[in-house]
Structure formats: structure tokens, C-alpha cells
Image (cartoon, rainbow, N blue to C red; front, side):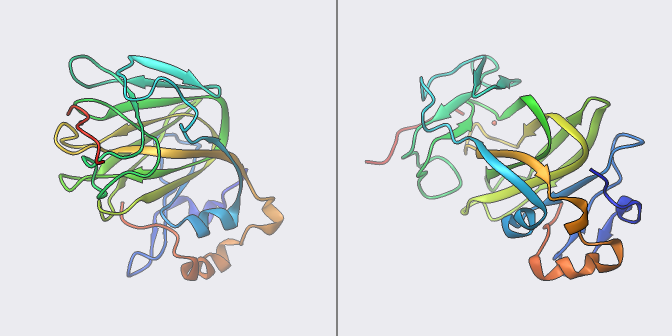
Length: 226
């Protein structure tokens, strides 16, 4: 995949409609971040890899687990680093009540997702709390590619899509005060960029404004609602 070199610098359009992030941790890698799923879908071909619905056991602390080829590793939590797949019906996330299974942790949320099959495109639904944004670090074979600070209304389910100029081997999700209000991710997709012949040239990149590319850029699980 070739992200045009013109986009290798941060491009911001007033109002936050589009932010193209290409100044990355690697001298040779470029990344684009999307908070609008339609804009993400317009440039990528993806497949749902994990929605955690069939995963078992749910609601149990695990140091790590592998599901559908990807490995999930806890880096923080109580009483030890852990990851948890919470079943639907929890009321201690930012949203009023969860309606699907979500990857989170008990205590604080700081975990990694290692992709068994690295791809240049990754996306997932996001759950935040009101205490602060999520920091999403993106890694490839060359190391850290880029870091994005995700902030959206915590009472709603958000989205983050990542398009990189090299395959993404893992991501790290870190949030603030998850011990009080849970955060997490769900519905992970992976894929590729749509053929470059269909990708807008740098001169037409502003045409993506209408698509709204991008916005601005852990607690024990408690009782479910009945």
C-alpha cells in the first residue's frame, strides 16, 4: 500500500472533519486514522475477525487468551494484569448498558492485541469513559508506527479505523481510571486498502471532508442490569 507522500504530514481541516496522520514513529511508515466508519469503509476492504460473542469463558479474568488467531494480553488490572470479555448487560461502562460482548479488564484497561495475521488495515468499536481519552499505539514489524489519542462522547459507541503503509502487527489500548468506569473495544475488523487506482490522489484528498474522516486526536466488573 502506498499512502501518497503529500499526506505524510499532518493535515487538519477546521472543524475536525478530516485529519490525516502520517508523521509516525517509523521513518518509513505512514498511518491514517478514521473515527468515521463510512469514510474508513470507502478506502478499505475488511472482514469481521472478532466480535467476542462466541468467546468463552466470559466475565472471567484471564492473563491472556487467543481467539480467531489473535492474542489478547493484559498489561494492567486487579489483582493482576488481565483481560476480560464482558457479556452484554453491564451498566458500568460509559454507555447506559452494553448490548454486546466487549474486550475490557478488571481494574484498569491497558492491553494489547497481537494479530496472528498482520494486515495493513484494522478497525474496531470503542468504549470510553468520562475520565480521559484512550491512547491507541500501533505497531508494525519496524516497531511503533504511530499513536493516536481517541476522544468521543463516552455515552456512545465510537469507532477507530487504522490504515498503515505496512502491516500492523499489534495495537495497545490504554485508558484512564477504568477501575471506576470500564472502557474497551469490540467488533475487530481487518483487511486491506482498496486498490490504489481507486484511492483519491493528494489533490483530491479534501474531497474526503464530506465523508468526515477523523475526529480529534482501568475496576472490577460490576453487576449487570436485569
